Image (cartoon, rainbow, N blue to C red):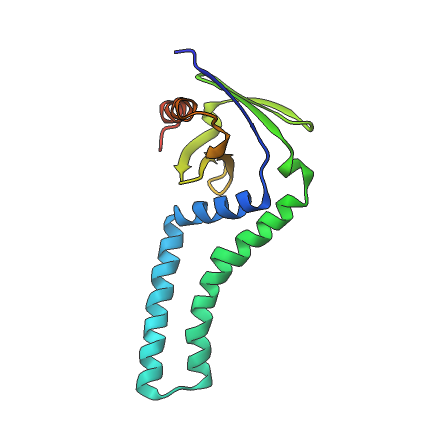
Length: 167
């Protein structure tokens, strides 16, 4: 099959924020953090109810949910803000994707690589997050809005499934 898909897009700070949250939600460590935080909050509430409301107990009970807010809201917000201030991250990119390779061009660079640079893909409601083979915390964002037709979106999805081992 010799399918070629071409699309262009610019990423916004909102894209970065949403994609980072999507990435976090698909990580096992995130769910461990959520479960541990929930358990510690529950223990804190039980402790406070059994032994009375102390300043330290209240602080701990409030600190744990606040850490989740920092993790899911503030951290992605800051990363999106930083990315939006750097034109290299928000410039228009043109992608040409084939069965054998991916070519990405922008006004700053032109890259050509094979599918092996990606080890896995995370598909969320709004994005494809292509995870790097060399750094499991690095990913490339492709917004689903770039696909002009349902057929184009399905062709891209099929290319991704065929070429990236872990979907």
